[in-house]
Image (tube, rainbow, N blue to C red; front, side, top):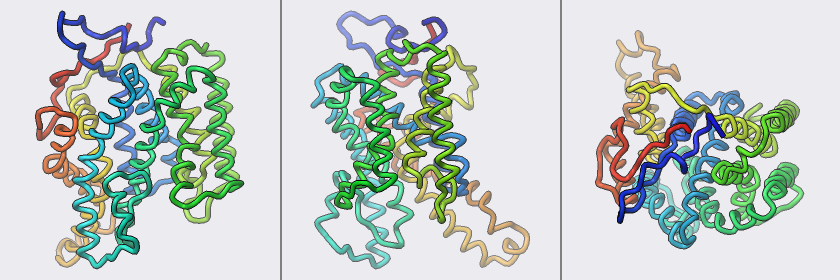
Amino acid sequence: MAGLVRPSSAAPAAVPGAAAPPVRDRYLDVLRGFALIRVVVYHTFGWAWLTLVFPSLGVMFALAGSLMARSLSRPAAGVIRARLRRLLPPFWAFAVLAVGWMLWRGWTPAQWPRLALWVLPVADPPGSEWGEQLTGPLWYIRAYVWFVLLSPVLLWAWRRIRWPLMGATVALAAVFQYEWVRLPLLAEAAVADFAVFGACWLLGFAHRDGSLDALRARVVVPVAGLLMGAGGWFTATHPTPEAGYDLGEIPLAQALWSLGFVLLLLRFRPSSLPRLHGADALVRLLNNRAVTVYLWHEVALLTAVLVTDRLWQVPFLAEHVPLDSQWLLFALVWPLLAAAVLLVGWVEDLASRKRPHPWPASAAPRQGEAYAVAT
């Protein structure tokens, strides 16, 4: 369809005897980069309305589902191994610091065998009460692992029942919203996250196989409006005492709103994006270090808090600098994240079997990559 980005049709001509390089979709890279920035902003300021303005987690799962569907043109076992290989070494590097820090501060695990979840996070890795800020975001890693493991079956089912399968995941979100079914704690978290974000992951499949583009705009717009309207209404009528109108605490609202929002983003993607050298470099850096940024942003936030606590001891700074401002924390987070990228980001390159690069923000595609163009 004219004006839409079709990565598969935009791949560079193959060199005889050489494997075709993977093709990057610049629009998807921009969405992923923006989603990561939004996650950092949300965890810094705690603004619940951000979950409605841009539901980052639904976007990230949809993009990951699209890439997984593309990869599954190859044998499934090899694809799963490759995905886990790219994820787990950066996760292990984070685990060394997180577990070591919690043990150093006096944490004694109640169940030592559960430390194995820091090796393969099929359930939430254990942590101390003090370290909850470090371990809290790891639910996304656990959910991603399960989506990767289930994707061959999901893709098989998607090719046969498509939209009813997507509807079933939303219905499952309602089951967990109203607690109609109770599961063991470790299993319940994994199944609940599948229910909430499964439809977004399947929407990534639809984006990849072209079935999303086959839907007419006069169908997509009212359906997306209905989903977001239902999600918005449910949010307004089911605020939580602790978080208010935060989608992260309202499973059914998260499922409906995220699905409608991502449906619009992927169906009406632009045919081209303006190129800004600085912005392109940032987008490329965020995509090449997405796992590092996600895992270490809470460490950066916690370190920023510790730094400001020290600054209060300097009378001049305490008097003239707004040390209690969240904007100061936000300003400190980014250089600390940059330090994390420099210190441990190269693990992502090793995990992807690339040459380690301390700061992969080059505007040109790296070796083995190419950017899709509009058709």
